[in-house]
Image (cartoon, rainbow, N blue to C red; front, side, top):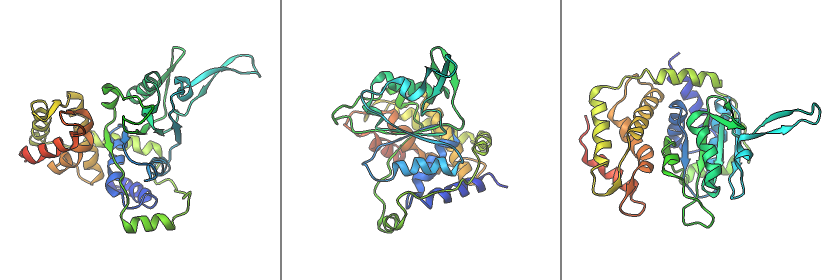
Length: 300
């Protein structure tokens, strides 16, 4: 079976619940396949929770939702050692991070201390409690939502944590027919698994074998290096950001059923992968700057 076939089955399953958002689903699957995480910036009620829950169900994995608040403590998400009354000993009680897909809702409403606990989980695939490192289930995906920074009670995500999100996406409102399908859909639709979680780990290995021609690498390097010298940007893309675009392009090529990356893969991914890794001189001008660079940099 071609690697793209099970991925197509997963996409069909998710799109049967998340209507009219094929591109968002493609990019979310890209993040899973590349071992990354997703940051969603959008208004309430457009399907962010449904997307995260459908991803977990279609991948045959577990799902957890964490509502981030200002009084949330690191132990509330990682878990803690507690006294077992039956034995009189101390046992570890896992927190909600021990799931395959974790929805971190309003991530920037919690304190930097709790954000740092999530940082370890995203970067290392583990949590540390009382000096003991505990691995998280794989695949492990954080789908985080955040509020605008001018909202009351928000804490800006540090640049190092933003950099750990492979993609920044927006769901957007559905078109008319997609919204009609939402109206007719059950309030809590069920979704059967389209693959087992272990199969996704195998597909990650396949993605790492996707061919990237030197001309494609040159195009990627031209893009990221231009961000570092562009007058519209104060801060350009780091080498980690370039690597993120490289990984994501391989994953997207596999989803599209190809054994090689094409320029269009990079062009589809440049905005979602790079826009939160740069800082524009003009307020909220990061997406526009990346879009303009794509029009200016020649591609193969």
